[in-house]
Each structure stands twice: as C-alpha cells, then as structure tokens.
Image (cartoon, rainbow, N blue to C red):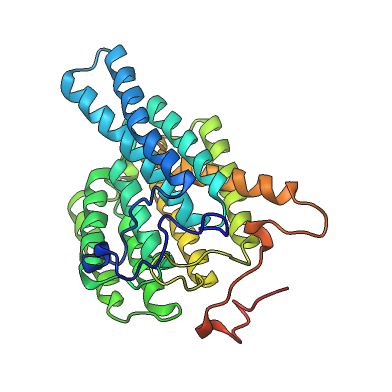
Length: 321
C-alpha cells in the first residue's frame, strides 16, 4: 500500500464484486510483483509444511492439515503485517518468513487467533477504505468467540471489544459497533464463568521466551510511536488512510498477542504466529528507521502523510512537510 505498490488491489475498485458481500475483504491482485510473489509462496509453503509433517511420521490427515496451515500462515501473516505497517512492504515478507519458521518449530500455534486478529485490525484501520458492514462485524464477533474457546483465553474477547470500540469512536465511527463490542465482552464473560481464565493452568516462561517477547514488545511500541505519517490509501476509495486508525490497529495487534501471556508459555505458543508477525514489523521498521539518510525520514517514522479531507486541521493527522 505504498507509493510503488499502493495496495493489495489495483485500479478503480469501488465496483469490485467482493464489495457486494463485504467491506473488509482484500483479494490479491496479481498485477503487483509482491502479490504475485505471495501467491507463488503460498502453495510452496504448503508443500514444505506437509513434507515436514510427513518426515515426522504424521498421518495423512495431519499432512493435509499441515499443507492447509502452511498456506494460511504465509498469506495471513503477510496480510496482517501489511495492515500493521501499510507503508512497509519488505517488513511483511520478514514477518512471513518468521511466522513460517514458527509454524515448523512451535507446536499447535493458533490459526484462528491469527485470522481473527487480522480482521479486527482491518476493521479498525479501514485499509479497504470502507467501514465494516454489520454482516462483517457479526462474522468477526463469531471468530473472536471461536478463538476464545479455541485458545482458552477469554481476554481475547476484551481485545475484540476494544477493536469495535475503536471503530466506534475514531474518525467516521459507527455507533452500532458498541453492540458488537458488548457481544465480545459477553462471550468472554460467559466463557470465563464456565471455564475460568486459565491462570491456574499457566506455565512459567523460559528466560529466552521472556526475553524475546519483551524485546519484540519494546521495538513494536517504538514503531507505534514512530508511525507519524502515511502514504497508503484505501483499496476501494483511494482515500488516504487515517493515521489514528492505523495506530489503533497497531495497538490491537499488540494486545491480541499480549493477552495470551496470562496463560504462560502455552499462551505464547498459541499466539506465536501473531508474535512472529509483530517481530517482522518491528525489525523491518527499526531497520528502515536507522538506515535512513540524514535529512530524510522512513516510511514508518515520518514519510509524507496524506491527510484525509475530514482530518484537515486535526493536529493528530496534520501533514508535516
């Protein structure tokens, strides 16, 4: 979504058939080099993941599941990184590589948590350029509640609620999103009453894991602070993205990974794909920030921002030249 490859899609998109169904869908447009690369890497990742499972003596069903997971991880983590750092295409591939390595090394990372986080971030930052439809919000609430049950972490419901709250209060917010925020909290509360919050079953963190999580968190928070300008535009509208919404989406990404820490080391494994994505975004952003030439700025730490017409005069999103 930068100036050279501004988004996952190309051309006048307001009439794209996908928008008859959803406002948060972003299909790949193979006119872009990076998108073609991702579409080629997806089946390759599936083959590698399936082969790795076969070498470990997995059954046919396990091999098929591994192939599916490889495809989803490559696309999902790349897409999530593009949401978290819209101006930084290379960082998305760093995230992809780290996440795929994580899939091969970590036992049972949650694909559902990854997908739910991706869509929550997209609802907040509106990278498509459109507000989520009610049907989109219903779908995402369902994914959030499913992820709560799958990961045994009701705190993810609070993250989902916060994402919907952000969409309600940020620029051009939709007040009906408060109802979906309440639905996420209700789902989390019901699960907590029935099953607890899992703290009693949590395992302590190995020092290496604690250091990695802490380091990624510090760098990622620094990235949020450095993100003061944007070049990217919405897929469907070509209107500049809102800085406050992109930052809000970045916060949701960090919270989606962090909420699993309450479960200890098992929670880190569950959220490891999201953590790997955050690591790629953070490393890519820091590399660009420190590698910039004197007198110039990085895309994450101060590239030219395009201000939404509705944001003109707002000090938060005002263009700095």
